[in-house]
Image (cartoon, rainbow, N blue to C red; front, side, top):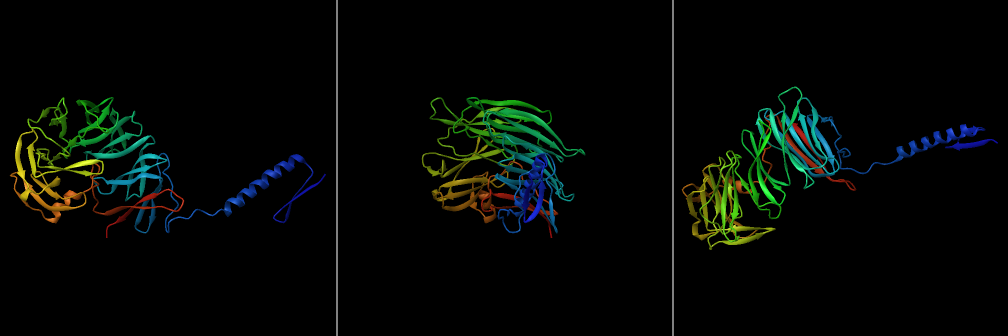
Length: 412
């Protein structure tokens, strides 16, 4: 029996053997599949942008060069997206990528060489980002687990050798809420849960060891607040009495582990602000004339008085706000000067002042008041480059997850 099968109007097969017939079926099926694939139209995408992709495992996401513009990415299904930090040479950068389906990734991008390399991939992490420098060619990073029962890992990344070295310093359990790093990168302090209580644990990046500084801290809505000084040497936290009606301020020297408790009580405490060098701290005094303003899930103290104290807890100055106005926002301009801003409501601010250690209020200039509006950021600053500018561009195509890419250009 002869079989005749035509495809596209052509006589492809005239077969008498069943085995040859089966082989022919396979060949034709592949031809059909190929034609079907070639006729499929790609999903629409943003004008001028490539289809989003997720970063591959290992090293080697190519950088795209278009004229003078270097593009890293794009990455799709991101959670927090892309963040970047320039290294000291202004030519290389650490790039943190948060991709929902690829986890957290840390990349090294060498702009002049137009090269990129993945340093760390953590698919089960909630976040991975740098904390600061432990030397000109050494960066300290933290990896926070997605699982509350996991461990927070502190690493150092050394760029001084021909091959980049990633070294584990130590791990701490539970949920990490805040971290502090000394300016030389030697010590990192992590505020984290440990079972039914909170802890402060200090890690030494030079010896890869960890030491418990304070244990038994209360856990309230995750972790009870702890405020670190910008230089990573001091910490302050509320310490309630047994009845819970009276609160003092507990102070911790993060270098020595020494703790002190203030002799005075605070009726309400929404924040403690440290000076840049950790020598002084300030807070708004709740003395009965204060008010409480609800802001989202939190309460903000509005006070007619600011207290400036030294790192040992002793009062330096109680400063009264002019004309009985209520201050809601404070920040340090430098190591000896505060900036305070009147707050009339959640959305309405008033006058701004600078306040010295002598407690004298003076009108603040717009540039000085701007420090009150600076957004929260990672402990490590983004740094800068004298030769390049960088920015993150995001978009969302119809039917696709949001995408972001890093754009790097030479300065004109």
